Length: 380
Image (cartoon, rainbow, N blue to C red; front, side, top):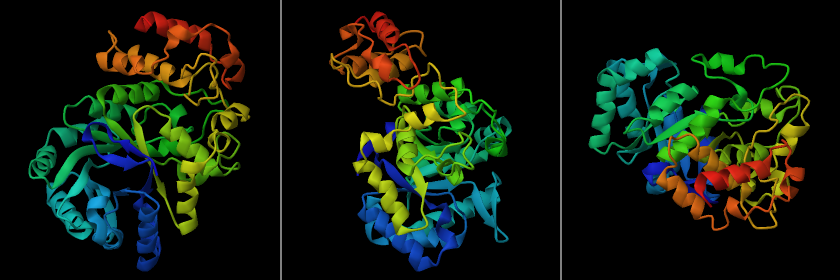
């Protein structure tokens, strides 16, 4: 299992993670076994947004013997009231619910203390201008949470989080279908009807990924399979089915993404997700699926899929495009981006304009032109 640095937290997280929301629908011993099997396969990050005691106890029991080897995303504001989940900023409910989480998970701390599920400006203000955020900072100062994160489905809220000086990582919903959706304060609109012709990556989402990369804010991914809809041609808004490996690769090729948290019901599903690490380029290839789908319009957009390779001069075209996209978001090229670009060794300046890459690009990106623009921007 490959590890990635989760932005400025400096935590090394497994590329494939564990989304815990399905744990409660199985007998305890079954779900404990799932987590332990995931650990054996190299998974080391798990999300616990769930407030119910059963889910929390399952995670706590499963990781008790290796707590320091796990990175837990624990949510502040997810509460269990009268047998039901309630998202709230009412501190009379928030505090005991989070203390319960810490106790049941074990170890006396939570690695990533998540400002839970902020999708609207009203809720952002409710979090940031009340005693709620004071509590979050107090937990951080005391070491009860080691890093501060935030979960959202709204790229505008995610951008505001990334622009703070204290939120170190973001849990965000990413998949090929969601990336075509504009910002919304209503999660349910994310699951509504898609246009007959999908219109490519939403500019706000693309800009968010670039911003997080520039500011070193790591992203972990939820809803990577669109609730399973993208695995089923009948439910997929593309009218075709993807495989888990393709969707995992899509998420992991977004700038700043470090881990995709998948939900599991069975040992076989864990093995299937972990098999991503040994999958061939053909098995990971999401771009051909999108390009051949009856409903798509990614025309001219680089998705960093790597289909353009190999370059006869050895240029890593996808990475050049990533650094170019990062740089043009700023008034001046950030020195960190310039340094990473120069660190490629072979830069856009080596392009000979043979256009062979363009014959392989599923989305007809004018790559030679992009290489020229990158050369002019970076001066090499």
